[in-house]
Amino acid sequence: MTTLSPTVPLHDGRAIPQLGLGVWQIPSDQTEAVVRTALDVGYRAVDTATLYRNEEGVGRAVRAAPVPREALFVTTKLWQDRHRDAERAFDESLRRLGLDYVDLYLIHWPAPGQNRYVDAWKALVRIQESGRARSVGVSNFDRDHLERIIDATGAVPVVNQVELHPRFQQRALRAFHAERGIATESWSPLGQGEVLRDATIVEVARKHGRTPAQVVIRWHLDQGLVAIPKSVHAARLRENFDVFDFRLDDDDLRRIEALDRRDGRMGLNPATFG
Image (cartoon, rainbow, N blue to C red):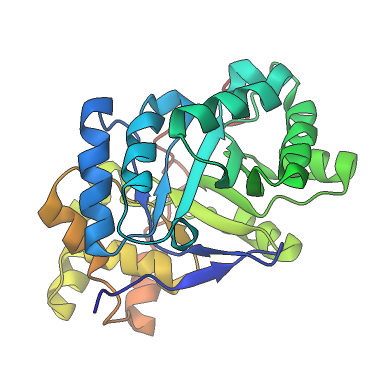
């Protein structure tokens, strides 16, 4: 029997698999094969975006999947050059995917310099109302961005997908998410691989007889986070998914909590990008 990920409830009544596959930086001509392998392993969530230029490969794998479409969770994202015509951009993504709907559509970045993300959010709410996206949310939004779109529309994103890993734990933002019922989804959950060499992570992995990557993914799950690690290698896909038969103890969690750093961000800053 194939092991499946537990799910995290969304405030719109739906649920998202807690562990999925991110396909950022996977070349288009490899994406279909990688996603097919992931589905064979047991992954049921795939996270892509217009920017990634591999929606077609994701769609082919999903359409050929040996499980019903409703058993899969497909996310794609709106790039910031399309905040003015988000509905048309969404239709283009849907055509590239070759699907009737996506499970989650996100604004990829707020791009505050353009000051159009409120209009983009209004468009996403309309897209959800049409049924073409079952749920809608955002990515890389800080608290002020979230408050602005919620105040403007009354509609609360189901998810905010942000950079999050043991060296950049985003505890204040996660607390705000919890207040508003927003699920936190971690991109770069392994800290671009750098955190896997951290002595604390290595020691905890040795203690549990696991790999550092498995310990970090388990940390995300134990925190109630959604995680989307990326890999193109079948063995690594299996390793990353083999995390449901152990848990970290309180001492492990305290030690990993201490790894958080003010300067831990590795990616772009949402307050200034765009």
